[in-house]
Image 1 (cartoon, helix red, strand yellow):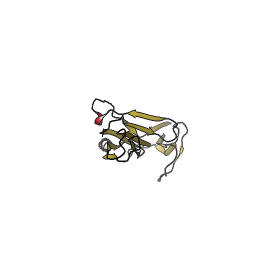
Image 2 (cartoon, helix red, strand yellow; image 1 turned 120 degrees about the vertical axis):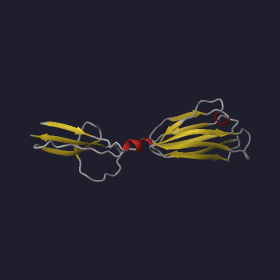
Image 3 (tube, helix red, strand yellow; image 1 turned 90 degrees about the vertical axis):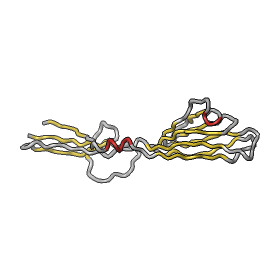
Image 4 (cartoon, one colour; image 1 turned 60 degrees about the horizontal axis):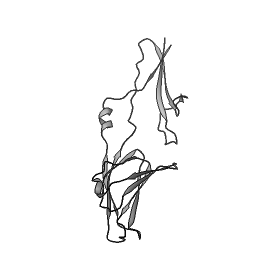
Length: 179
C-alpha cells in the first residue's frame, strides 16, 4: 500500500503570480505644531508592501515609524533631507502596519507643506492551487482532502468554502492506491 501526497500548480498560474497591482499615493502634511513639526498617519493593509519613493521638502530630519499589530516595538526609519538626495534609505514596510510620517520646518507653524510619495504593492497573495492524481487501471484508490494549522497534525477536510481564521490553514490531498 502506497500513499502519495499531491499538491500541483496549474502552469497558467505562474504568469498571474508575477503580476501585481501597484498604487501610488501622495501624503501631504499641512498642519504643524508650535515647533514647526507635522505628521500624517496611514495604514498599510495586510499582504501589502509600502515602498517610500520620495519625500520633502523639509529642513528637519523627516522620519517614518512603523507600528505593527501586537508589537511592543516600533521600527524607526530616519529619512534624508530634500526628497532623499544623498540618502540611500528608501524603507519598505510589509503590512499590516500603521505608519507615521513626521518632519517639518522648525519655527514655522503656517505656510509649510511636507509630501511623502509611496507605492502600495499587493504581495504574498495565495495562488489558486490545482491538484490531480491518477488511479491506476485495475486498482482501487482512496482520496482524502486534509487540513492542518501546524503542518504536523492533519485531519479530514470537506469540500467547500472556509471563512477566515486566526491561524493559517494548510491543505493537502492524500491519495492511496489499494491493490
